Length: 234
Ligand code: NDP
Figure 1: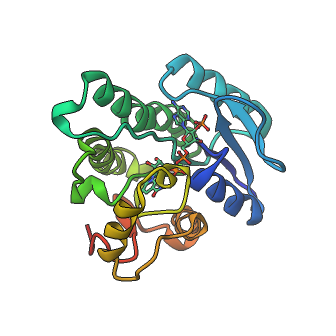
Figure 2: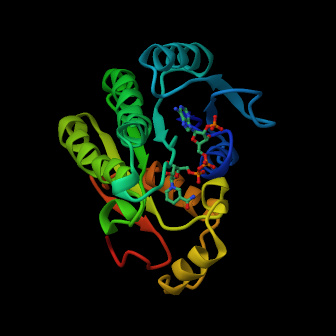
C-alpha cells in the first residue's frame, strides 16, 4: 500500500537515495529542497528546517498533495568542522539548529497527523560520531547524539499510538559531505572500518526503508548502525 513519505534534504546525497528507495517501493514521496528544482521523478517542496514557518508551509503542501505524512525521514544536516578552541558559537548553534532542532521541528509537525492516524514512522539520520565522538566535530557529534535522546523520548511518548521513532547511524558514506575530506583523513578513516570501505548511500537507504516497513513494526527507540563496523554497536 502506498504511503505518504517525506524526506528532508532529499534533493541530494543520502536523502535522495532514501527518497528513491521509498519511491521504488511504490510510496508517494516528497523531498524537501532549499533551492532549484527537485530531482527528476520526485515531488519537491521548498523548506528550510531552521525556519518553523517554512516547515509548517511545507507540511501543508505535502498534506494537500499526498495526504498526512505517514513516514518521516529527518535527514537534513550540515557540518561546520573545526577544533573546539577555534569553533565559534555560531558554528556550534548553526549545526545544532539544523541537525537537531530541525529534526525536532519536522518530527513535532509530523506527529500531529500520525497521532490522528494512530500510526507512523519517524527515522532520524544521525551518525556514528554521535556516540563515538570525533575530533573537530564537537558541534556535529553533539547534534547527532542529541537525536538519540530525542528519538527515544518520542518513542516513549508516542508508542501507545503505534508510532515508532528510530535512529539510523551511518558511518562514512560517499557523498558531498565526505568529498571535502582530505585524502589523508580518508585513509585514516578507512583503517578504522572493519569492512574496509565507505557505504554507498543506497546501503543506508535500504535500512531506513526497512525500519519504516511492516517487518520492523516492533522496533522503536533503536539506534541502527550502518557503518561497516566502525562504531561496533555504538
Ligand atoms: P549532503 O551534504 O550531501 O546533503 C545534505 C542535505 O541536507 C542537502 O539536501 C541539504 O540541502 C540539506 N540541508 C542542509 N541544511 C538544511 C536546512 N537548513 N534545511 C533543509 N535542508 C537542509 O549530506 P549527506 O547526504 O552526506 O548527509 C545526509 C545526512 O546524513 C546528514 O544528516 C548527515 O549528517 C548524515 N550523515 C552523513 C554521513 C556521510 O558520511 N556522508 C555519515 C553519517 C551521517 P541543500 O542541497 O539545499 O544544501
